Length: 102
Image (cartoon, rainbow, N blue to C red; front, side, top):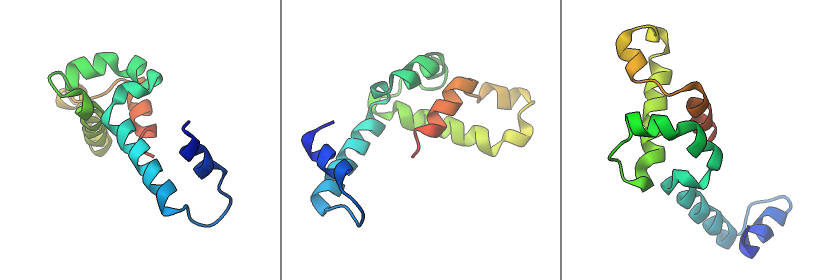
């Protein structure tokens, strides 16, 4: 954690100073641009990335996985159809992708 982020994390009550909010926004953008920052996500999603997001630039892989997860969530009622099974993430990957959306 950078010194600036540590100061933000140590802030008590109220809103973050604009400088801190900007720093946190930049870190979040970096996390969303490179799915490999989360070792758990990489481990749980390596096969799903190959199936659903091959050819996608690295900075867009998390967005690709999120799109597949969103589609999976919306079509949960049809989960037993062959078409739905083709558009599914593994359970571990789905859980990791959904928890990364915070």
